Length: 391
Image (cartoon, rainbow, N blue to C red; front, side, top):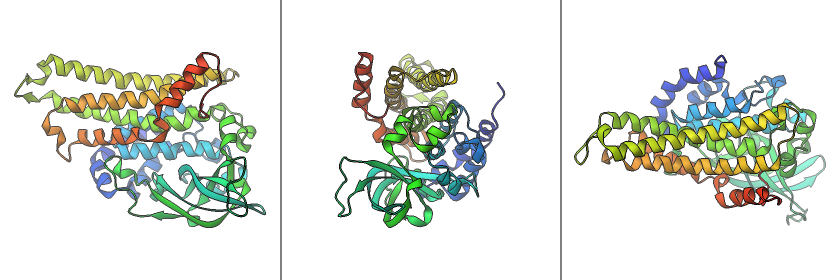
């Protein structure tokens, strides 16, 4: 299969991302010029509908591309993974919302933060929307945002039953709060707080969380191509895990380069130290297996949908559990690499310590919380309903 043009552009950009990774960390966000270069690769258009200038590609290409970016710069890969799944979500929205975002510029980027901390009161034609959110990765280089919120009664009390909705807003309707992203890992993602103060959001720029998960959102029912019949859990959580795997691949490359010529007072030349070499080989195997697991589960779903079949709940639950497990596997693999590289790897400016910190930061995303996904998979395998909605 010939190399995709997006993959080729990422290869060309890789040395720049690697060289600028420390600068990006110090800045605390993706610089505008790096954002433009990432945009020029087309990676964020891989899951975007063709009718709006996207590639509408097999998601395996997108997630492998995220890994390749993250292997050079964890922050850049993280932002690419998160922002890059948003065209897939927008494809589920009313066509009017898609036109607003993409008609003038198919390279328009959308950031997000989905915690339902916003409050929405229904008015004629839409909602009055307010709230404050944390952790909006890449918000400085995006022009729109997806925000989570709960519907409320006119007096501001939560509506019953609880209704969780995703709201789409343009840059003019929200404020980015500076100095709200001071962390030890993934520092360059610029995952800052967002504030919205009583703005109007038309109904066509909303979608319920339930409709996005069960495939009944307006765009999901209008566009039945294979890509947009993939489960939510196959797309959004894997944006996080693909970045985590790529970060681990970057850590592995840094560790291999560091250990190749290293001499230890205790063991002599590291390449002749059986225990350390065993650990490096073990870590490398775990990281590679995680990549294959993520892409393999996606491929199995893709093949079922391409053949006109539904994605069975057992496969969905298994893939979701594997997504979480892969995030933990690669982080523990990075620990093995870092723990056996000696004191030199602790120095600021060495790539391994940055990848190590980024790897642990990635694991802290709520999508990687293990208990519910593992219990859900076990229950589904026994013939019961899943315990979580993200399947």
